[in-house]
Length: 238
Image (cartoon, rainbow, N blue to C red; front, side, top):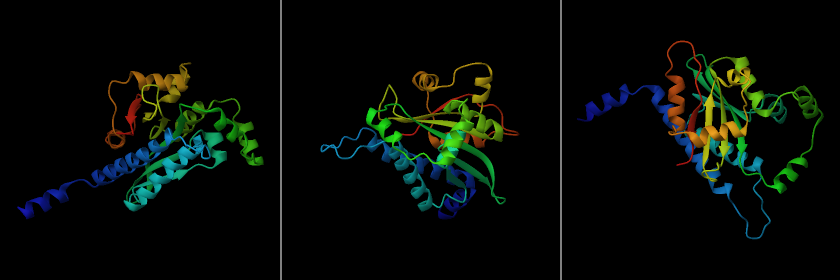
């Protein structure tokens, strides 16, 4: 009996392990961020800003992925402030093709906060604007934040996916969900809007959501050259 169990265990594809670990790391980070989404300090001394929520999610994911020894299979690259302005992505996940370690596919993530408070906007204005940030803004003034990430992914190819990650939704203010596709640039080319309204409407009308692990499976299991993937909705919080 023990021998059979070991044989079955060894038959499980390697892909299964890092997909499962990726799923667990994201859910763990999402639950951690969820604790702070609606945080209210009784003394009013601590305010959780939009950037802090992003940091909480991303740092929790990175720490967890290191503990799970996931970094050899999936890397996570945080964008600089200048890159965020130019490319519209907060960070990029890359799945590496073993043994070359070249990216097999990439997921560029843009974080969107549904609930914005006036004091948070004031805090953002206090951020020191460097000369390089000014240049980045001048270079990208003709594009919206959503257009930038769609164009960025399109410039890489069909194996680069845009993931719009929402902290909160109208249906559930504490939920963390996302919309993923590698075809948003086609949406824009057809003169269709790509903004929070369109993306939130996609989430609100979704009849089914996939897990982060299932999201990764769907784009890994495609046979042949990557094809257009219509928007799929992903639920990050349980």
